[in-house]
Length: 146
Image (tube, rainbow, N blue to C red):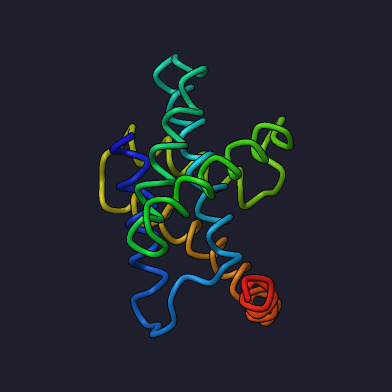
């Protein structure tokens, strides 16, 4: 779990380094998806593939808690893990495969370059969820809650 949190936190730090905005609503699911990808890859790396879900649930909740609070983080975590489990057979995109390979390399090689590479890949994934449609989703959620 520590490795998943460390890798995704590094990516979040990289992504938000030059930004003043916070985590968009749609990006919460991306954090969950990425945590699931990394967790699955790393648990397979240590020959414990069945443990990915527990690692992903705890990691996602831990990563999102500072942004949205523990209760919302736990619900988002569970939702992300369910969706990931339903839809994931193999990495669905080349970027997902790059994140999986990068996470394994970061753990195996334990150096700055591999950590920077996987962080950059995750930051790109976060960026794909931060376009104008995220702002629209944030507004829909705001109106749904009122």
